[in-house]
Length: 281
Length: 123
Image (cartoon, rainbow over all chains, first blue to last red; front, top):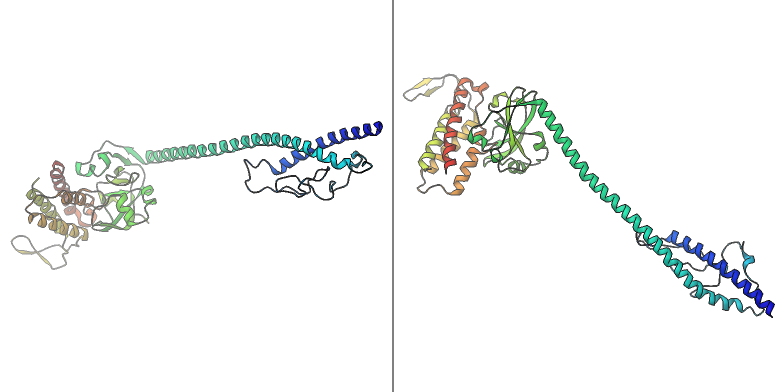
């Protein structure tokens, strides 16, 4: 009787160790497949129902979503390489049921501890990944801002270089009535060193050719006469129904700056003699 | 700034444009102030005609107004005359088309417009 008891206890210890190992493996495997659900995919996770523990049937008997469940006959639904680890059934066949129930509770507790720890690890890992992802987004956004800033700077530098090549600064001044058409009376004066294409909106009392022109950059974002009227602060009677392109030949003195009462980024060019304008093809 | 000063300024500008508002064909005679005389054929400038018409109408309207200009009238005139593209400041005669007469007229237009601007600026 005592020998039988010793055999049973030894078997119990083996089962305990065996169950612990499998539980740990299964917990890690399950968590690896299912994840913690806290940082990544928020869709319902499906655990493969084939993952099953080779110990007694679960209390519910079914496989609940997100849980590791029992599948099949009370054994792992595969070959039994470790069947020898199972103890012999008792003479009355009862011990296994009793022990299984007892171990279920213990194992459930151990399982929960493992799961909790696993969740904590995965949660920390998820948080780390999430932070990295957010950092990546922040850097991307910052990179975008920096990129845009650099792009703008490069564009400005390119424009400055182009105008630098195309024009020589001059200290010429304009009469007060013309100067007042520039925002705050501020304008720059240059003598063009190469031909420059400029544009005019005309219609109504406004001649296709004239002394005021605008740049390609300004025309690019004007899509309708109303926008041209607002952007360039055209007076009543100027309908901007027509857009005209001209070449301002090199050697021409131009005055340019922002438009008084016009859009923030609209540029206007003034020339003394409209006769020098060459219609652009 | 009195209405009379503005009217004079507007009429002065219109006078500079007047020669370019009529077409002279071969054999046509034009009034020189004392008689109809034969003149060189010349095309009209439609924009000079438009501005002459506008300036004359402005002057006529102000001349018939007893009260000083309202702020809205003042702003309207200022924008039409001294705005940027499309305003009277934008307008000049094509010297290639009208020759020296256009150059002289442009110089006078600039001068008279600047005088008128002083009236508006002082207000």
